[in-house]
Length: 314
Length: 279
Image (cartoon, rainbow over all chains, first blue to last red; front, side, top):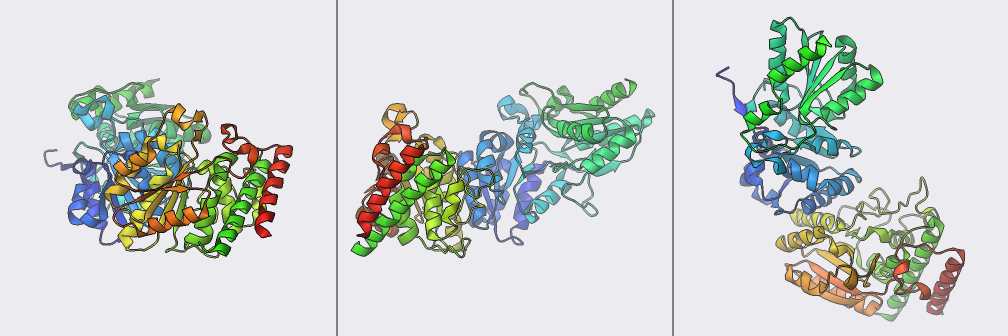
């Protein structure tokens, strides 16, 4: 495992914006005084005349993005998830979602892996909030390869998109040469018949690792990567429910309203089977190194293994 | 302003007011007070100032308008109907199920450039439109109207800072200073005064205007067109409920629809005003 390349998806975001600038002349980037952290600074350096810093004023930034989109621009409004989905929620709903404008929201520093900054900046609620906005597409890529593909998919799609990126460098698990991103389609990372682990974001790698351990222990676990949380690939989820009879979800987000909720909502309608949710329970985070926090909150391959074993034995 | 044009605009403003009464009466709800206070400004913008085409509402180089104080949509709808964006009959189904005309402006209605009405948001979207014009080197202007109560929203000042920073001199923000908001006088609720000083401090070119004097409206918007390097704020002194005697300067008419008797009285008053202008 020593050769595993790690990269934060926020880096992928900034680089992708830079790389797509030539191909998409209407692409413009907005930030709220976080260009160094969201990595839109990479775009700014290459395209200073297409980058607009809005200062520490996220509500206005989302409105400006809406106005730009109404005039044919493709704005990428960038800030931390806490401020994009949290502070600016109502502007995203009313000025972007309701008029269904072609705004792309690049939300970085999502989840507990923000680390040392602590609870105020660890956004575990953004997926839940964005899911409730009609017509909002939500993408939560798992690695560099998928994040790059997601940014391209977002710009090629006409409508509002919320993209979730992380601060922490995570293993690159997809092959850039062969990887194909299809908006709204889940990816079966590994087949299996006893249980399906449905994961998103950085938990996809944990799920893949967990499945290897389970395999060695005689449990055949299927792993599904849900990069598009909305619209959810209900067809695949329901197929997995029917074929494996048990689903364990894994996300770096609150267990309330995120991937686990979305999967449970789908399964209860098409094929009710137990859905066990791994995520941040109904609590706030706290300061600490990201890797330690992930373990502490059970966002690890070890906890997926333990949860699957416990759930299968029930 | 030339006398005939002025008279025509006065007649248009009167008809906009009649549409406000028609719409809110049929809806049995809505906001007549603040709609009536912006009728003259809308008449001037939609019938004299803005480059728009009802046959081509999405014309790329058109001037844009955002009703940031979106609850006064009846006035906007009335102006758009008169200008030919849709039939005036639509006002009779304002706020009804399945109606074209929603309680607050919706971008899918012909002539409406932006969904708005959650206060404080319209000015930000107007900033985005103005910025797009700057990026593309277009000459269109973006107009927005805010309420004086609305500017209590913090987002308005984020937008004010942004517009000045990016030198959006293609943006004109009108503040409808009728002095009243739902809970009472703006100076008593949580005062946003001094409004002119605040916009000036935020780097805007500020013009004050009598909202019910077309010569003064013409003066203000003509001056606004000459300003370079700064966004323009026009603080228009207005009377809430203007044109309907029993609604004027009465906070109770902020969000109350007229009943049948009040409707008939209001329409009779406005008809008399129109007749006087036509004679």
